[in-house]
Length: 149
Image 1 (cartoon, rainbow, N blue to C red):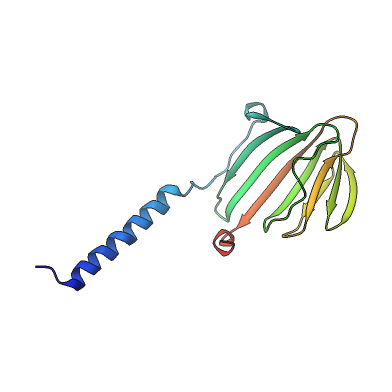
Image 2: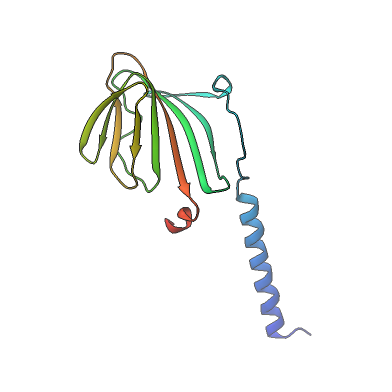
Protein backbone atom coordinates (compact mmCIF):
# COMPACT_ATOMS: atom_id res chain seq x y z
CA UNK A 1 0.00 0.00 0.00
CA UNK A 2 1.31 3.45 -0.92
CA UNK A 3 1.42 6.21 1.64
CA UNK A 4 -0.06 9.62 1.02
CA UNK A 5 3.47 11.06 0.91
CA UNK A 6 4.57 8.56 -1.78
CA UNK A 7 1.49 9.29 -3.92
CA UNK A 8 2.11 13.05 -3.62
CA UNK A 9 5.75 12.56 -4.60
CA UNK A 10 4.84 10.44 -7.65
CA UNK A 11 2.20 12.97 -8.80
CA UNK A 12 4.56 15.92 -8.32
CA UNK A 13 7.28 14.12 -10.28
CA UNK A 14 4.85 13.33 -13.10
CA UNK A 15 3.66 16.96 -13.34
CA UNK A 16 7.21 18.34 -13.35
CA UNK A 17 8.33 15.79 -15.95
CA UNK A 18 5.36 16.62 -18.19
CA UNK A 19 6.15 20.33 -17.91
CA UNK A 20 9.82 19.83 -18.81
CA UNK A 21 8.95 17.59 -21.77
CA UNK A 22 6.33 20.07 -23.00
CA UNK A 23 8.80 22.98 -22.77
CA UNK A 24 11.53 21.01 -24.54
CA UNK A 25 9.18 20.07 -27.39
CA UNK A 26 7.93 23.66 -27.86
CA UNK A 27 11.39 25.28 -27.78
CA UNK A 28 12.79 26.12 -31.20
CA UNK A 29 16.28 24.85 -32.00
CA UNK A 30 19.10 27.40 -31.87
CA UNK A 31 19.93 29.06 -35.17
CA UNK A 32 23.53 28.45 -36.15
CA UNK A 33 25.61 30.00 -38.90
CA UNK A 34 23.31 30.31 -41.91
CA UNK A 35 22.92 31.83 -45.34
CA UNK A 36 19.54 33.18 -46.49
CA UNK A 37 19.21 33.63 -50.25
CA UNK A 38 16.69 36.43 -50.91
CA UNK A 39 15.54 34.74 -54.12
CA UNK A 40 14.44 31.70 -52.09
CA UNK A 41 12.50 33.58 -49.39
CA UNK A 42 8.71 33.38 -49.73
CA UNK A 43 7.06 36.70 -50.62
CA UNK A 44 3.80 37.42 -48.79
CA UNK A 45 1.59 40.17 -50.15
CA UNK A 46 0.22 42.63 -47.57
CA UNK A 47 -2.36 45.39 -47.85
CA UNK A 48 0.49 47.93 -48.03
CA UNK A 49 3.06 46.02 -50.14
CA UNK A 50 4.91 42.81 -49.34
CA UNK A 51 6.98 41.05 -46.68
CA UNK A 52 9.76 38.47 -46.73
CA UNK A 53 10.41 36.66 -43.42
CA UNK A 54 14.08 35.59 -43.42
CA UNK A 55 14.28 34.06 -39.93
CA UNK A 56 12.91 34.19 -36.40
CA UNK A 57 14.70 31.88 -33.97
CA UNK A 58 16.70 31.71 -30.76
CA UNK A 59 20.49 31.90 -30.99
CA UNK A 60 23.27 31.02 -28.56
CA UNK A 61 23.10 34.52 -27.04
CA UNK A 62 19.50 35.64 -27.69
CA UNK A 63 16.04 34.32 -26.86
CA UNK A 64 15.12 35.38 -30.40
CA UNK A 65 16.69 37.03 -33.43
CA UNK A 66 14.36 38.06 -36.23
CA UNK A 67 14.91 39.50 -39.70
CA UNK A 68 12.38 40.40 -42.36
CA UNK A 69 12.19 42.72 -45.34
CA UNK A 70 9.21 44.99 -45.76
CA UNK A 71 8.37 46.65 -49.07
CA UNK A 72 5.86 49.49 -48.89
CA UNK A 73 3.88 50.92 -51.78
CA UNK A 74 3.87 54.69 -52.23
CA UNK A 75 2.38 56.52 -49.21
CA UNK A 76 1.81 53.31 -47.23
CA UNK A 77 2.70 52.24 -43.68
CA UNK A 78 3.26 48.64 -42.56
CA UNK A 79 1.20 49.24 -39.39
CA UNK A 80 0.12 51.95 -36.96
CA UNK A 81 2.72 53.58 -34.69
CA UNK A 82 3.53 51.28 -31.78
CA UNK A 83 6.12 50.45 -29.14
CA UNK A 84 7.58 47.24 -27.76
CA UNK A 85 10.32 46.17 -25.35
CA UNK A 86 12.52 44.74 -28.13
CA UNK A 87 14.99 47.02 -29.88
CA UNK A 88 15.02 47.16 -33.69
CA UNK A 89 17.58 48.08 -36.30
CA UNK A 90 16.32 48.98 -39.77
CA UNK A 91 18.43 49.35 -42.92
CA UNK A 92 16.71 51.20 -45.77
CA UNK A 93 17.32 49.31 -49.01
CA UNK A 94 15.48 51.60 -51.43
CA UNK A 95 13.10 54.54 -51.50
CA UNK A 96 12.39 57.25 -48.94
CA UNK A 97 11.17 56.50 -45.42
CA UNK A 98 9.58 58.98 -43.07
CA UNK A 99 10.17 57.77 -39.52
CA UNK A 100 8.57 59.11 -36.35
CA UNK A 101 10.25 58.28 -33.04
CA UNK A 102 8.94 59.72 -29.78
CA UNK A 103 7.22 62.56 -31.66
CA UNK A 104 10.27 63.51 -33.78
CA UNK A 105 10.01 63.04 -37.56
CA UNK A 106 12.95 62.35 -39.90
CA UNK A 107 13.12 61.48 -43.59
CA UNK A 108 15.85 59.11 -44.82
CA UNK A 109 16.79 57.31 -48.03
CA UNK A 110 18.59 54.20 -49.27
CA UNK A 111 21.56 53.14 -47.18
CA UNK A 112 20.28 54.88 -44.05
CA UNK A 113 20.02 53.10 -40.71
CA UNK A 114 17.21 53.56 -38.18
CA UNK A 115 17.39 52.37 -34.57
CA UNK A 116 14.18 52.02 -32.54
CA UNK A 117 15.00 51.98 -28.82
CA UNK A 118 13.07 49.87 -26.33
CA UNK A 119 9.55 51.11 -25.50
CA UNK A 120 9.76 54.27 -27.66
CA UNK A 121 6.67 54.96 -29.79
CA UNK A 122 7.64 54.71 -33.46
CA UNK A 123 6.15 54.45 -36.93
CA UNK A 124 7.35 54.52 -40.53
CA UNK A 125 5.83 55.47 -43.87
CA UNK A 126 6.92 55.37 -47.50
CA UNK A 127 7.32 59.08 -48.26
CA UNK A 128 8.75 58.65 -51.77
CA UNK A 129 7.40 58.40 -55.32
CA UNK A 130 7.98 54.65 -55.77
CA UNK A 131 8.28 51.63 -53.51
CA UNK A 132 10.35 51.72 -50.33
CA UNK A 133 12.02 48.62 -48.96
CA UNK A 134 13.87 48.02 -45.70
CA UNK A 135 15.45 45.20 -43.67
CA UNK A 136 14.28 44.87 -40.05
CA UNK A 137 16.45 43.22 -37.40
CA UNK A 138 14.83 42.68 -34.00
CA UNK A 139 16.24 40.80 -31.04
CA UNK A 140 15.11 39.58 -27.65
CA UNK A 141 17.91 39.31 -25.07
CA UNK A 142 18.29 36.16 -22.99
CA UNK A 143 15.69 36.06 -20.22
CA UNK A 144 13.75 39.02 -21.64
CA UNK A 145 10.76 36.87 -22.72
CA UNK A 146 10.38 35.57 -19.17
CA UNK A 147 10.65 39.08 -17.71
CA UNK A 148 7.90 40.51 -19.98
CA UNK A 149 5.32 37.75 -19.35
